[in-house]
Amino acid sequence: MGIEQKLGNMGIATTTLETVVNWSRTNAMWPMLFGLACCAIEMMAAQASHYDMSRFGMELMRASPRQSDLMIVAGRLSRKMAPVLRQLYDQMPEPKWVIAMGDCASCSGVFNNYALVQGVDEIVPVDVYVAGCPPRPEALIHGVVTLYEKVKGEKFKDLAVT
Amino acid sequence: MDKKLEPIVQALQEKYTTSIEEFRDEVHIFIEAEQIVDALTLLRDKYDFELLSALTATDYWPQQSPRFHVIYQLSSIARNLTLQLRVPLNGHNPKLPTSTRVYQVANWRERELLDMFGIEIEGHPDPRRILMPEGTQGHPLRKDFPLGYEEPQFTFNVEEINLRKPYAKD
Image 1 (cartoon, each protein chain N blue to C red):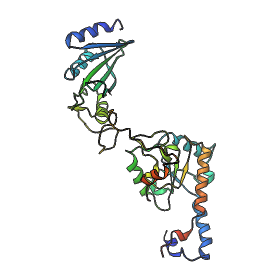
Image 2 (image 1 turned 60 degrees about the horizontal axis):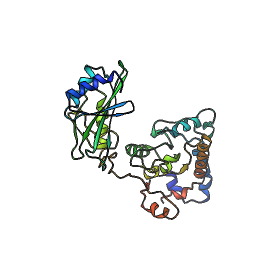
Image 3 (image 1 turned 135 degrees about the vertical axis):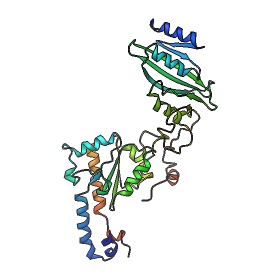
Image 4 (image 1 turned 90 degrees about the horizontal axis):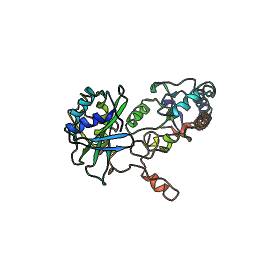
């Protein structure tokens, strides 16, 4: 992140650098294993050989937050689990993104009660929401590709400090 | 009532002052809170009810008083019988002696009673909340606990609800 903060305002010189950096980020983004409930099955199905997510760069899923870029929150988040989610999100190094997979992560789905957090965006900032209960593996892959387009559009001057 | 169950129910009726309720093939026996551990020990040792299938409670507020009915569902695998014991408890400081020495499985079930209904269990080895996070006020399965839902967002109120919702700021 240091290079972006110092060089962000340099105009033409940074455009090619941005393209290279964003290309490299999208081509090897490793997600963190955070399957909570039923959506985890569809996440596993998307990672398996039939709908392969490895062709999009997600070669494997890291169980450790320190070694991953992307957190796919798949499933219901209960109020007891919310501090754990926040702690894991804080342990991920920058740059990091979050996909809220499924209805329960986006808006708590069919469960509107005292025990579940109403949408994961009350706890972590979310970049892409994938709808579905559960979303088909193709829908999750569409969400991942949408995230890639968002990452490719990221500019250094949004992050520049000087 | 099952033929094999009749002598057991009669023995319980003679020993404790109980009342019986029958629904289809089920038999519900009402027992006082002080006598419940005694009754469970008797049923487990003498009449082979080895399994405590369920230990839950129901809240009948405000229609009935006493408000809580703690339900012990016992099964006998050897004799192929099931029996239900009910303990009526008042809403005002409900207490119950622990059945963990009789059935080990009652440990977590009684923690659930404490968490969801606020029924205090005397002599429990580990009295803390099991399902709700620590620091929750109130007991969710009581009938006077608010439903705890978020207002559904329609087109006319979506902006005001979004302003009040606590979004995470990175």
